[in-house]
Amino acid sequence: MPLNKETPKEQQSQYRSLEELQTQISQENLLVLVVEDDPMSRIFMEKILRRLGVEADFAKDGLEALRMYMKNEYDLIFLDIQMPVMNGYETAELIRQQEQMTAIHIPIIAVTAYALEEDKEKCLKVGMDYYLSKPVSMESLLKVLSDFCLDKSEEMQ
Image 1 (spheres, rainbow, N blue to C red):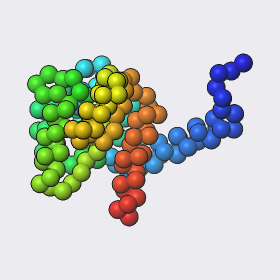
Image 2: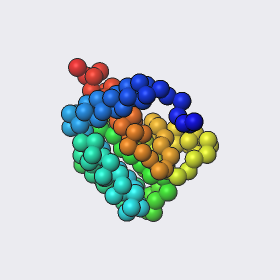
Image 3: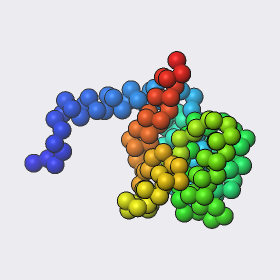
């Protein structure tokens, strides 16, 4: 007996909607910043984002991320928490402080192995918009990009 409770028709519908989302995302010309100190995690994120048609810049720590944030206009930031030089919490707080001067809000998504409820709450408290637990999947990245980037572009039209 299969463990999946979805009917084949529901599975097909979900697959089709994921394909449609992927097509929409790839047409948005998105630029995201991925802040991740682990080389394997960076490669993994790069492959998924490339497959989704999303352009990405990469930073190894929070300080490098801040420099890149100041020079570029990103649609979204994926931010690891535990990094050398400057952690994700500090980085998010500094980005939010800078945003108060510019009035431009960039979604910050925590991407971390920390999975306790208090970790999620701390991410939100310092100004992050959402939380993804590692390992991330293409579907979870697609949903985040859809929720934070497609909705934004539709509001502007």
